[in-house]
Amino acid sequence: MAEFRIEVKPIGVVHVEAGDEEVKKSVNGVPGVVEIFPEYEQGLKGLEGFSHIILVTFLHKTSDRDRETLLVKPRRLVKYGFTLEELPLIGVFATDSPHRPNPIGVSIVELARVEGRFLHVKGLDVFNGTPVLDLKPYTPGRVVREVRLPEWYASLLEKARRVEPGLSDL
Image (cartoon, rainbow, N blue to C red; front, side, top):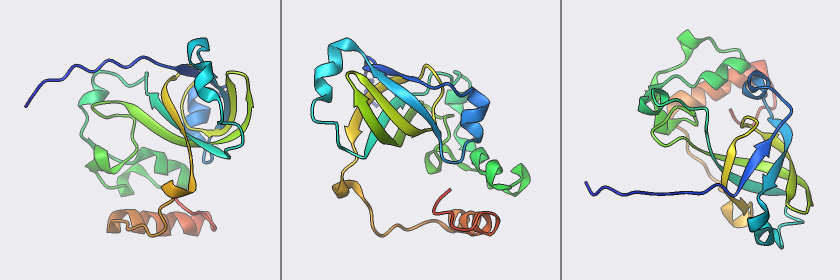
C-alpha cells in the first residue's frame, strides 16, 4: 500500500456554550457559532440564504487509543432508552462514532444567520473548540429519497420510535 502524507489546515473553529456531556446527550444538537478564520472569510460569499450547511470537522478529543477502535456499540442510542447490552457490536464504519482511524466528523446543521465570518447555527453535535476543516452548502441535489437500512439498524429505529413517536432517524 502506498503511504500518503496528508496535511489539512483548519479554516475555523466551533464555539458552543454547552458542555461536552450536554452535547453528547442532545437529541437534536445544540446551538453555536462557527468562526471562520479571517483569511478564509471571502470564501463565505454567497452562503447567506442556505438553510443548512455541511460541516467537516476534526474530532480533536479522540485519543490515539480510540483511533485504533474498529468495533463499537452505537452508544449514542442510549439517549433513546437503549441499554448497552441490547446494542449490537458493529464496525466503526457502520456508525458515526468519533472513535475511528481518522476522526473526521460530518454534520448537517441549520444556518440561522451569517454575521461576517461568524456562522450562527443550530443542531451542532461537536464540542466547543472543534476545528472546522471545510464547509459546504446543503443543496437539494444531496437529498437521498430512497434509503436502505441494515436489519440491525431498522430494528433499533423501530424500538426507538416506540419510546419517541415521530422520530425520523437515530
